[in-house]
Length: 574
Ligand code: BGC
Image 1 (cartoon, rainbow, N blue to C red):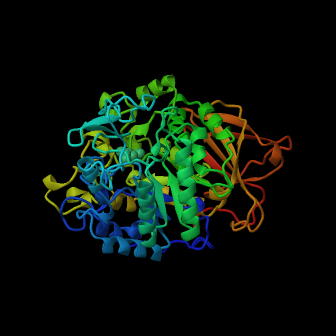
Image 2 (spheres, rainbow, N blue to C red):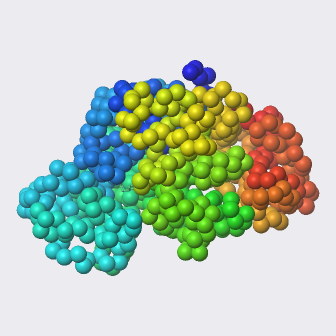
Image 3 (tube, helix red, strand yellow):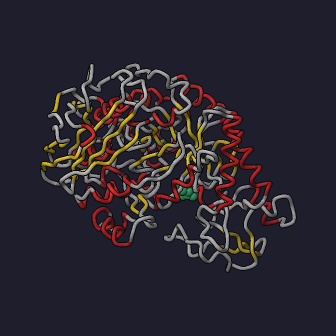
């Protein structure tokens, strides 16, 4: 495969706010490419696909944990935070990955499950066998399981309590996730220092950012619910201060599956910042809700909510990731509706969520896939793609837990989808061979060969987005429309660096969730008399009336991105 050179956006390399203009791609090392035929993906395999990712327009990779681990929770159960799982490669290969990514102007963000360890971690082994030793207090030990009764259980499918009795120490230890993942005791200064050291270790190796896994849960209290306790925020502030001081330009990303205001709290304030980015858990399920309810209202209210976030803070918007599509932070009524639409087979459910990939969720509808990607790429924040979704990969709900959507990447129609040369029976997970999503049909090679494939479409929309800094850096104003299925907003950026020169850029984004064509009027009072131009092809569209109203007609589940004003040159294609 050969790929054309990427466009170099001016200023990206040195831009301290690179993360606000970046397109991120979550790649599970184990699932991407197997370079040595042992049946599991590895770092060398990923290095070999950097050209592909660069061609796609990816600016930053997020790598879920690749450390030593018994792999009972996809690697989020870490037994040594400083080593690479031998199956994935070596530290030298990791350094090579960082170097080769940087050569392509691509950043590397790693994942750090700092809240807990595997029970195989040496700290835990020492803690359970030597309560008065140096690691005796590294975990949350109690004589009974009565404390923190207010703290909810997250993995409701498998865990009955947040406490598990350890027969060696003859005490209970606390865990927010699986009972093989004991929570670290953040009250202990040694634990906090060890976390700082781990962050320094990886930043010294050149990583550009760290996803702080399960960040709300560091501290517990009897009065609170163990989610975003004040001590947790204080700790993140100190960590941010250290990172800014020693590693300017590197970022921290919060994985906080919380209600909107609580997620926003992980950005901190202008004076006391916490994370540079936070995943937008509030917006994600509402996108799926809008698709099936044909109502834009839920999205409109969450996007209109003004959350005071510090300058430079950025949302990480996403449709899917390696976890279930979580429905924890929505009302019961809403949750039941989502289950009815998207998880009609109980096998599709996991914990409080849905363990399916994007394309099967949307019934492989090309219109819906385009609509949700257009939303993803125009909402405030930076988009995070999940590997394989760019070709509309399917899932396998007969696999346990979240493995359903962690199957090998489908590169070609050849053996093991081109993922590995191993005996097919040896693969860590089978490749998808279902009727609709079989790797014979859905793979990178065949989509490269079809100019109208989803892959080419996604690549094009990424490049159009990247030609307009407004999407990454601009403000959002949600606009009233006359149709309940239509969402409209303007993204505005007053800075420079756009293809329209130094003048402010305003882009009108309109989406219809209706299952039939509709016509709607949009209230554009601030843009009365403006001309409108399609960002993709450059065609001129109707002008906003002198009264500030624009009438649009939209095909079934379709969208527009329209430049507002009179451009000197239009067209988003690179
Ligand atoms: C990760 C999950 C993991 C959990 C426990 C999360 O939030 O995204 O995949 O199971 O943390 O580490």
